Image (cartoon, rainbow, N blue to C red; front, side):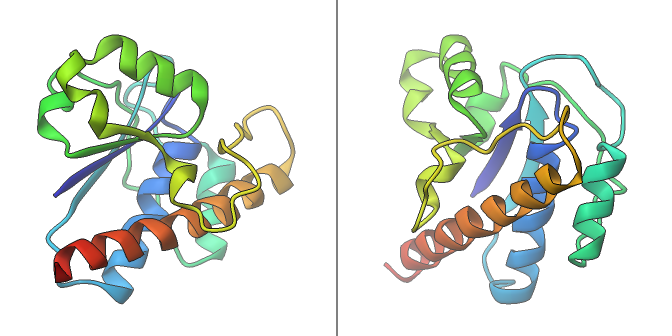
Length: 157
């Protein structure tokens, strides 16, 4: 199983999602053979590390994002990843626009996996204050719980 987390620039939400889910997998389901990556729909930050505020917020929760580097979604990603999780509706639409029609079922919203989701999207914290980065992690942890639960259920089936 291969999972790709996607936001716009791949420096805030999607690398945070990658880090949160990678950490959760390592701690609670290391037996699952899952590859994880993240990417952006735009090329604004290709090659750059995650935003310092994302790195700091994740570090406070014991998650290390420092090795990650931004990349853009490639056409091959639609074939190589089993599940592509967009952080919001805008990126969901962009992914579906780029993907071959027979791959649309692989593209979903990250927050679809959150059990008690009040929000349908993970809001972009880039232009806000530090609390926005904490909220992103809270939402990603909630959605990652649901994602892990679903993957564990599939593995048992």
